[in-house]
Image 1: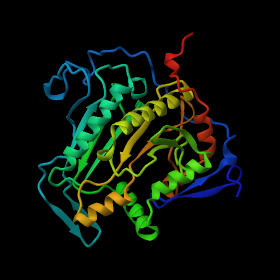
Image 2 (image 1 turned 180 degrees about the vertical axis):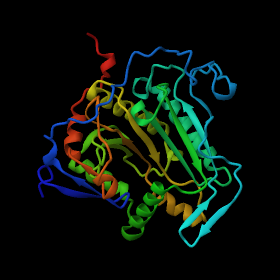
Image 3 (image 1 turned 90 degrees about the horizontal axis):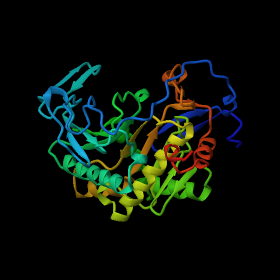
Length: 354
């Protein structure tokens, strides 16, 4: 099958969904909406930023004069941990139930002008260690089943503040997308006795055409079933169910992978590349010792990057029409996207000397 020439659909075994790929459309001219490029040249401290040290947040709370990673409860949390337990159901058509949880904000650095790829490796490793601490602490709380760690970067992704930060939402129930991945990974383990993503990593490393880069512990790739133009994943080479199981060497290698992925993204269009990025890892609640073992055997930690930019720093992909009503569609193949990302420098464009 000639994947580079003809319309095709590709299956995502992790989500049990399909994506339509139309490589013959890549020469289509663009006359649609363009976005303003993300601006660089930010100050190290912005007196008007509610995430910078010493500045005031909502409700008159002042941030401490922090010098590393800073975590605090989200002032506008989407979930509350003291909601009453209630449920509504009418004729199997109108169903609602209380969802409890906790939402936190995690500032990666006190520096307003930095991003993960431009931070020192030691600082990124500290972020990873705090992510692990919050995953374990929130996940051990009564009534919490899943901890979702994520970062929205860039105003086009709805991030109104450029200060380097991410969020952590801990939920009472397993959300839809992790639940689907849980089902598919458990099914693979039950049917074949192997880990879905261990098998996938081995296959991709053997083929090589969708690999962006790799280090001792991790591989970055454009998944075969990618939906977004420059979508990517970072996966550990060994079977790791969650952040809990990272060794010190793997934390260092993960920091390296996050920095290298972010640098290649920024260098693609010479802009602070917008994306939504997040981790999928094993749920934090289990029904029995056997269920815990099944979770750890099935779940393989991984990072999803969903960036919207398509042709330049000002042209983005929209999910409309057929994609909203039928199935996702993309023009550029995963192989072409990987080749473009693979060819980029790992020296950040803002560090280049003139």
